[in-house]
Length: 518
Ligand code: SF4
Image 1 (cartoon, rainbow, N blue to C red):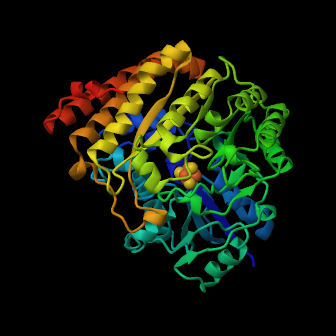
Image 2: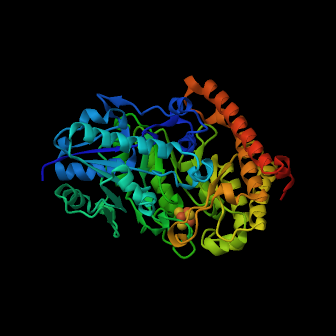
Image 3: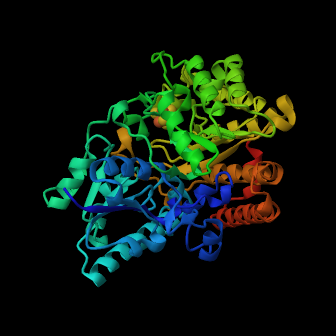
């Protein structure tokens, strides 16, 4: 078949957020509270050359690669919402939109937007993009179809009326590398279902190499997990590990376009080439081999993984040290990691995530979190934890357990390792996904309790401390360093003040959050 396709994503997914760690979460902030002028200043579009983005989201690059092989290089373009109109012509039959959080139902956004009462920038800019596409095809009489895919499609699937409201022609749910050419041909020929659900998975050899650079240097290392936490969507994917040669080829594409950092995408990096599926002891030799190859690749200056389970470093500090050395971790080369702390309640760990602590038992979870954080910090890693509030059946005692764990990290860790102690916790709102899909969304406005408020306040208070002490060491953009760190110090304190006022309005005293101790 002969037709053209444009691939894009909303503005929140096309920015490097000035290379400030964790600022990608800004897309989850409410448009009603964070002025647009500030959001836009912190999230400029990635570099464009001759109108086209030099770097693009990794999943868009995967789709591009499959479709270029199917239709030819001239027929597939990755474009930004900023100037997409320039590239739509009569030959354009599909505009494919990748999305992460289209309706603002993601757990971070739900927390920051008061349970969706405000509008997260992720939703704001997704709606803006889809409306622009509708305007363009209505105004010019173009016939292209709007097709939405990507990791956030579950939100549109459960609120499918939005497809009519926004004029979305097709929703593609699931991993598609092995079937995408057929899906696109069917869409163009008008024989595709409105919601296309792909239930099987591409084999490793069906996952293509990228043909253009990725944002943040993000490159996939492995898919799937196997710890079977009941609330986790990625856990439903089958586990696959990309060969080192594949990863190195992708790195060379990024380096060619000036990206010298490798952000290794994974559900849990410590499961790379896992052999011990029973107790989940990491395959340390495979991990060292992987990261030695990455750091040894020409042009690579820094690497860090996206996600990883805290039980892995706790399980073998010696092996973890060797891995850190392979990654060249040092005071000048801090490695970031996003582990799930989830909860300090052993009861909830046993109920919803009994394999999370493996090779330790679920009973040991709080100790695993503490020891794992200590091992990370000792080796120049800094975890940015997420915790979940509003698990079905969660009680005040469960929340107090989490606050106690945070208090212990805050007080005892510096006693043991001094200045090296650094971590953050972001509280997420429970979303009913995977095995818990029949539960209700947690609503922070109507289901806030005194203890839940203390947990949210306490974690943000710690973030303010880390912004004060640690941010200047990790902001790489030296030109803007002074301005940015001053801005974030000011901004994070303002958020803490606003949180305190929010709690007081409900009759809770923020100072009491400090009286719950380990
Ligand atoms: S460990 Fe993380 S990725 Fe794995 S199932 Fe649990 S929440 Fe999901």
